[in-house]
Image (cartoon, rainbow, N blue to C red):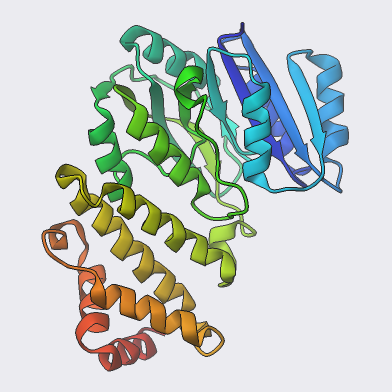
Length: 317
C-alpha cells in the first residue's frame, strides 16, 4: 500500500499536464501512486501522459468517455490503494515537499485531513529556494467547517487537502455539477472528521487561467453554486453552532450569482427574480460582522431598495 494516491482528472490539459505530473513525480515523498483519469480528452493530453508513464511506472492511466470532473475523481478514488488520497487539477503544480509535509502532519497528529496553504499564480512560477515553516494547528471538524463557510484559511477546492482514505470511503463528488462540487465534497468530509491539521505554508500552486470557469461569462453552471449553498444550509440549519456560518455562505452565494447574472438579467429573468427573492428572505441576523462593506451595502440595497441597487450597478459600470 503506497502512502499516498494522487488522483488527477485530465480533460484537454495538453499544455499543462506535463508540468503538473513532473511536479508530482519529483516529490520528496517517493512512496506514491499517481492515478491519471483521462476524461475523453481530444488533444495531446493522453499522449503526454503515456510518455511520462514510460519513464515512471508509478503512473496508472485510466481512460473513459468524457463524463465530467466529478466522475473522473470518483473513478480515481475507487481505484486508489493509498493510505491517503489527494485530488489535484491537471493544470496546477505542487511544491516539491508538499506531499511529504502533508503526510507527516497527518501521521504525527492522527488527523483525518491534512491541509496546506495555496499560492495563486498568474504567470509561470519561478523556481526559488524555499524556507519551510513547519508550524501547524490542529482543529475540530466544526472549526474547519466554520473556516470553510466563511472563506477563511480553508479553501473550497479539494486540491490542497490530503484525505485519509478511510474517511472518504463512502463520500463521493456529486456528478453532473460543474461549480462547487468540490466544496460540497470537502464539507461532507469535514462533517465526518474528528481532527484536521492545517498549516499556512503555501505548497499548492493554483494557476489562474483566462479560460477557467470563474473567468468565463455567466451561464447556467453558476446555478450549481446555489444548489450546493442550499444543501449545506439545509444540513446545518438546526445546528446552532454552525447555522450562522451556513446562512452567511448561503447569502453570499446568492449575492455573488446575482452580481454575475446582472448583465444577463433579461435572458435569465425568472432566475434573476428568484435570486432576489431568496436574498430578501434570508435573515441578516448575526452575520453582518462577517461581511465587508461592499457586501453589506449591496445586499441591503437588494433587500430594501432594488432600484437603488440598479443605480449603483450603472454607476459602477
